[in-house]
Length: 181
Image 1 (cartoon, helix red, strand yellow):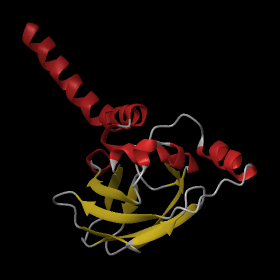
Image 2 (cartoon, one colour):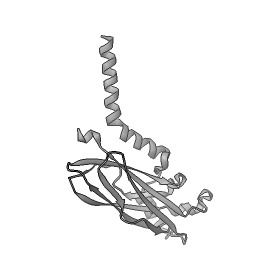
Image 3 (cartoon, helix red, strand yellow):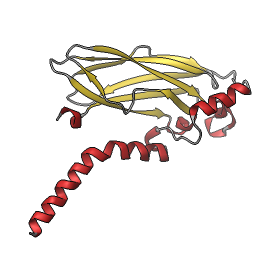
Image 4 (cartoon, one colour):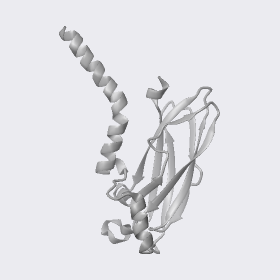
């Protein structure tokens, strides 16, 4: 009886780990800015509207570079469509990533992202993104995925952000084992 209870408990914990880990990890990262994940205090739309009404755009130019990785064993080709964009705080920008399933079977992937330097994450706002969403690609299918972002002009008022003129937005795609089963 005890063995059955312990086995059931271990099985339940395993199932919880598989199904609850991604949403819990995402929530933890967004709440703490862990690993360069952006923290939300104010909705991006509210922030943009506030700065638009004040016509807050600075003269400082920031280079946002894009990185794309795939986890081991993921038979996808994943690349940023452009290597970088130049944007001024207070402006929004659009970039694209291209992903292609190079296998002979349909595969579902999920991406995570981070922003470096990590301390700039609070000022980097993604308006539209493919991260944390399942992307199912058929064999040989190739798609472009947009990332629409905004750099908060309040970055100018933070002395810890002095001298930061380069930001790296990095995505990693992982095979979604839950949807594959």
